[in-house]
Amino acid sequence: MSQIDKHSSRRFAVIIVALVALAIWLIANPDNYQPEVVQAEVDPSVSSEFLAVTTLEKLEVKPHYTETKYVRTDFYSNWSTVNGCDMRNIILQRDLVDTVLDGCLVMTGTLHDPYTGQTINFVRGQGTSNAVQIDHVVALSNAWSTGAHNLDKQGRRDLSQDPINLLAVDGPANQQKSDKDASEWLPPNVAFQCQYVARQISVKFKYVLWVTSAEKSSMQKVLDTCPGEPTVGLENPQP
Image 1 (cartoon, helix red, strand yellow):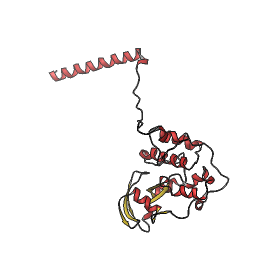
Image 2 (cartoon, rainbow, N blue to C red):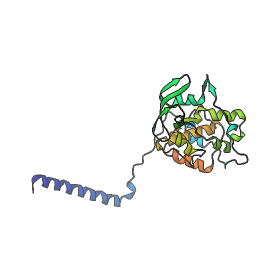
Image 3 (cartoon, one colour):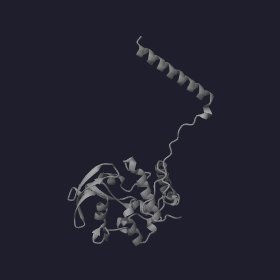
Image 4 (cartoon, one colour):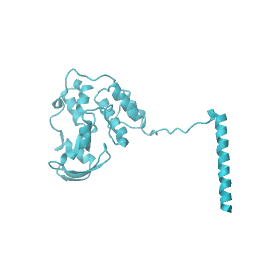
């Protein structure tokens, strides 16, 4: 046997002895072994009042309202305009990069889609514009059945045009989501699920909507992975 082989054998024997000793110690002292638990970090600069998990607890939990049916025109029939620009193009300008504009109109741009994680090249035109759609994060049908039927006409319009409830997203993903709540659909891009749920909670809190039991349970499950996720667009989410 060579000197190298002898050295390797001695190292292997030492490792085996050490492992056996550790195993014997763990058997004799089971209570002294504590596996490392990795805790999700909470940003100390974010007040607990601004955390999505805190705000979720302030929402009522109730079944869906079913007495009257949702009608989209109860919320809006056309996009609002701000300084002459319609809300669809305002959101496209906000969420896309490398945009080319014609006045207020976004002609081209690139979307790093939050729902799928894909990159989409947006080109305005028949047959291409729908590749990027503006999603109501809290679907208007869901909003109606969880309290928006109690809002006046202006309140419902505000909800439908509020930038915190609007995201430019992949068209097919938006169609797949439809009017589903968090218990029925979450973005396939897992990295965005915390922000998505936090945005839904923010909208529901701002417009005094409620959540169903299943919806809240799904939201809590997501936020368990990111307890420091802040709310979106809420200046002071007090009870």
